[in-house]
Image 1 (cartoon, chains in turn orange, blue):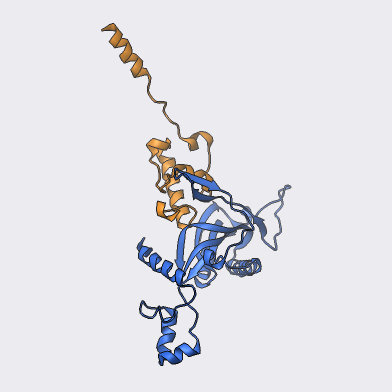
Image 2 (cartoon, rainbow over the protein chains, first blue to last red; image 1 turned 90 degrees about the vertical axis):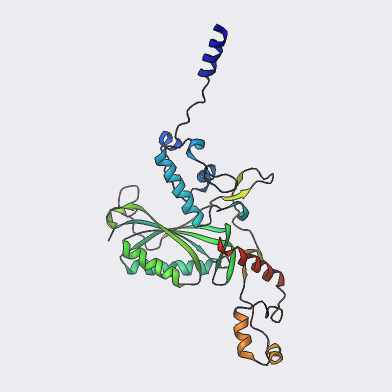
Length: 84
Length: 215
């Protein structure tokens, strides 16, 4: 019983490290022309990653999503997989 | 009217020569100055592959010449410039963003001593902006830096749905020249064989493109 309890507590301690928002930490400005930065936030199908995966805060996730959509209009980023 | 600093990114036709682009920028500068604006910087991104083909005025573009115009002005300046960009044939897409606020005189570029720089001609910079490519193994995207002096054929740059005007012989064969002239601008599926040109492969590609047009 004691063993099980220890195991349980050990397991409990191993939680995934909380990701922090890159933009809050490094204070980077989000620009739709910065293709190199924005490409980290889309997958190979051109979809925007959710904030639970890239760790952005809600404020910066909105900004990134907006920048990606602006970049798509100017054909800097693809809308879908079939385009590439 | 909001005074401030604006940036307009535009895509021009891929087949323009360097002199033609400079001449176009000169006209755009004139337009900006007409409404108390001041063009102070032009970033030339060069010929870039578009992330997806864009159709405009019966043509399908795969490449484009990107230009980023940085200027000071107000809402009227932006409207004047955008109205003109819609009008001319050289450009097929643009987007404007306000990047700074404040009076025009306060935003003018300054030199190291803090004095206002007198710019008769805008600063011309050549900038390399990476392109996005799917990795060869199909897993993830890749960032590639395009080379400045790549040479591509017209077929690779863009495809035109507007075929050349039919020769006199063909008009005589058809008997009705007026109808054929219309057909030459927008060939219907029936007339396509009659007006068939060496670029038959490009037409079939266009047909595929038309189906995808709804995207």
